[in-house]
Every structure is written in C-alpha cells, then in structure tokens.
Image (cartoon, rainbow, N blue to C red; front, side, top):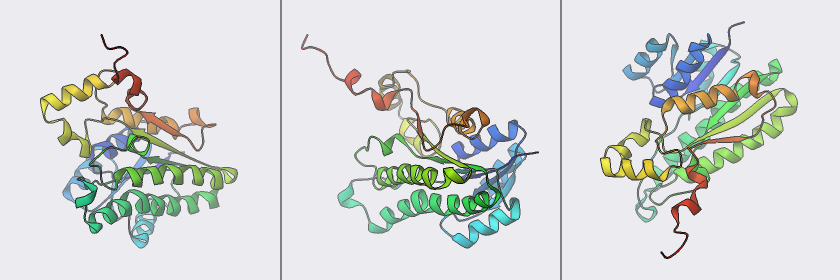
Length: 248
C-alpha cells in the first residue's frame, strides 16, 4: 500500500527535500504551505500534491488533510519562521508570530493528523526542531524558545500516543546551508568560520535532514520513539573543541 505523507513548510528548501525523499521511496506526498507559486512549483517538481494551508489555522489544516488523505501514514511538522534580533528590541508581535508558527502550528498539525492516526491505530509524526533547542544563541529571538518547546512537545506526544500505536520523534538540524539559514552563509568569511567550527568540517545540506526524517518515519526505526535526533556534524557537542587546552 502506498504511504501517504504530509510535509508542512513544503515550499521551503528543507521541506521540499523531505518531500522529495519520501516521493523517491514511492510515497504519495502532500506539501502543506501558504499558497504560492513556490508551493505549486515544489509540488510539481517531485510529483506531489500542493496543499495551500495555514498551519496556525485549525480549519485550514483539517481541510488540507481532507483534500489529501483523511488519515496520513506520516506527518512531518517542518513549517517554521524566524524573526531575529536583540531581545530588547524584539516586537511582541514578532515574538508571538514565531511561537505561533513554530510551536502552535506544529501542535495543531500534529494533533490534527494524530487524531486520525489514533483512530487507525498507527502512524508516524516527525517534528523539525533545531540545535537552538539545545544551545540558544544571541539574536535568535523567540526561535530557541519555540524549538525547545517543540522538543518537549514531541516527547509528550510520544508518551501519550505511543501506547496507542503512534511514534513521534524530532530531528534537530544544525548549521544547514538551506532555507532561512542560507543568508547567514552568504558572507564567505562567516561561512568559513562556521564550517571550521563543525567537527565534520562542512555545513549541512537539506538532504541531510531529509534522510534523518525519512529514517525516523521508517520501519528501520520502529523502536525509536520520543527522541530528538541531532543532525549537526557534532557542533552542539563541541564546546571543549572550541577552547584552548593550554596557554601555549
């Protein structure tokens, strides 16, 4: 039976890569995102279905699910935005917008799909968090708080829904040269500094995240539940590598 997979934020670089990975495996894939030419192009590129949806709107999500597959086998909660700058200058509206899309939107999407999966007795949900959930950085606004909240929500969903046949896991990307992170690497000097700070000595690709998401939703990960898989070339664990060992 063909798997039915939905990817929120499907018009973005990482969402499109995730959708393409499932499509390459023979799945029927729906790409949820705000309606746009970019969404239509992304869906056409992989032979998927464009689903114009606002992930902060419950009715919009339900309509998207009904239009694609009443009960998807896999829901990937990837939609996210950033509003960056010093906290003291952060407008309340910008802070709230990031929480609404990254955390509330993921909850609404997962809950809508999860209810249908619970009725069917099986299903996989994968959320996309960030190493900012583990190591917040200055100037990131509400993004670290939203992603840390999503990581905790992922665990909570796994604990509540695991006994009923669902698996819920997260992927935490590191320095990925795609999507909203791409502008950070346009400066060659910054790009070099970040590459050299990663123990794997390169930036991540959208495809690296797609492979991790695909694995967590596969039978190969059938005993993996409630976990956050960090895909960052080991940069989040490299604090001591960044510090001198001696004065010489």
